[in-house]
Image (cartoon, rainbow, N blue to C red):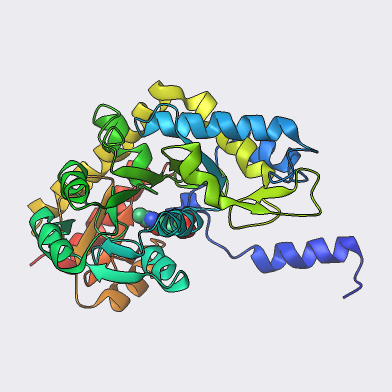
Length: 369
Ligand SMILES: Cc1ncc(COP(=O)(O)O)c(C=O)c1O
């Protein structure tokens, strides 16, 4: 400690110089290089605390507008919510809100993101696993297990992290509504892809049982950290308003204290610039890539876990570690599917067909019969 700035910069750059850039071949992570304009706005507003509307009222306005745009993406007019640090925080907050409303049991499948189990554990909620069919929640199984265990909050995933499937939200909401339960939709990754490509209302926010959703701007081109929690009403959100006695407003929103206002500005800018047209174009491009990869792999006899409904492709192999290491040696960074033994590729905005051609060739060489 105590080095001069020039030395500190030199050391930091030297130590970080070996990191892969997304453009080099990061094909399995859900992170991406941010849109340059959002990154530069992020840098300019790094001093802003989104939880201080007294000092930075314009940022609170931008947050309301950003949340309204996220709501629009999910087919929800007049929704409320907040910008979070990511999907994990949004999911924890959503399940906390459900618990505060009296639902202290969580229903989810094995393909739900790990943050759902994390939230249930932190909040000491009962966690009930619902059986799946083809990596999607089985509504009949939900009905059965719910009639045995009782009401709760059901997590429907729009874009499972490991295999890219979408739970049947409409059928699930029917079961939930009939059983006095509510739905949280985890569309952290799929929110920008599935609703825009399926008429903008595919999540069932029109159904009273859907109370909240997660959708992450940092999975679609905003800088990290940027997640989104969208809730049906201001009233549903109110347990997330906590006392903060020293703040001029006397309160703070969400699980954090000081919150990155730069994330709000960057998210607002991304949505404002992309608009519906830009979102649909990007979603279609990424989905087209996933279909292309899926088609090539299936034709080559490579075992794919599920036909992707959002741009995630999971190839099954028992030797995931060996394959991941081998691909890494070729400059291709793939991740595990998690819910099943296999290796996952995620189409993020930085991914190109050049990357994908390399990927398909490598996977075919390793895994085709
Ligand atoms: C469906 C889903 N939910 C939640 C998350 C958690 O998001 P984050 O890593 O931003 O906390 C992810 C991340 O992969 C996800 O795929």
